[in-house]
Image (cartoon, rainbow, N blue to C red):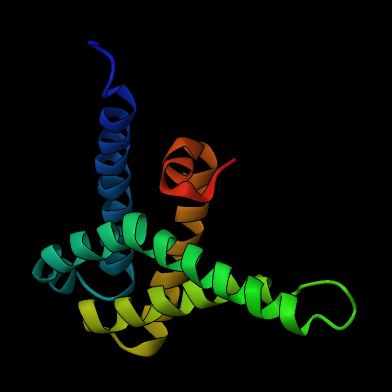
Length: 139
């Protein structure tokens, strides 16, 4: 009875830790790529972007992957479905647009910050697969 909520508690703990780590990476990237004033002025939006990248974007990409899988199965002429391989590209574009408009950067700076964020998210979900598995994208 005492450990019933253990998985939910660990998920919340990992979610907070992952959000802080991604926010720190985005903050350092904005600090180095743009300026110190932009990074300190947009702290709230950096934390919001980190939260969106850690929790909301994997859920959206799971839905997009399901839709692309269904469409790809319908139109797969060679018997193989390659349409689902577009999911990481769509995820990058979502992160790019959120970075551009939330932090208010130029496109070239937003591209580099989005690439760093996406690379760090890949490392984060590789090192902490429980966070990704809890969202329903399973191992």
